[in-house]
Amino acid sequence: MKKSTTFMASAVAAVALFLSTDVNAQKLGVGVNLGVPTSDGYSFAIGADARVQFDVSKQVSIPVTTGYTHFIGKTINNIDIPDYGYIPLKGGVKVFFDPSGSGLYGMAEVGAAFGVTKNSGTSFLYSPAIGYAWSNGLDLGVKYEGLPKDGLNTGQVALRLAYGFKL
Image (tube, rainbow, N blue to C red; front, side):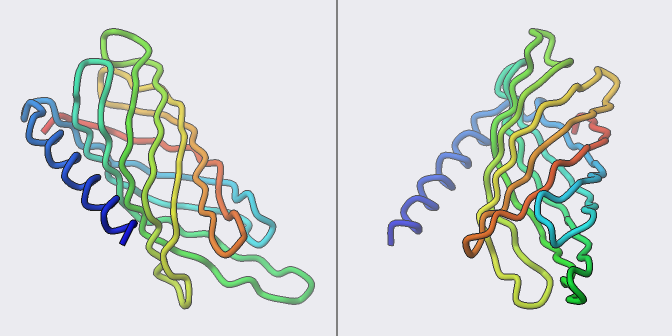
């Protein structure tokens, strides 16, 4: 019951924020992520994402991100660790340190990772990031993406290269 109340309150707040945001202040970005897993069972992570960014002001935005991420398993002590793939769905806040709304930024997102590989389920997902966005639409960022699940903390440190444009 508690989770559904929190979810509903968050959904209502998000809808209210989106409806009060200037329609011309939306951006869409598509990116590629290359990551180094933080757990021993995986050798590499690769993914792609799409991010809609709702500008609250020139310096503050609300990003909503989805895509696909794939962790490549490795063999440890003759045991094959299976690959792990998931679809992230995250929302958060992005703050530009320059008043122009481009340049260096910090971002924090939270959401869910919907597993698409066998027996992977759904887990909580969090992702702090720092990056640089040029006014021509290019965006280069470094993020940590953590997936605490079943007492384990699978995650990655990833480089994101993206291009964004106004809708």
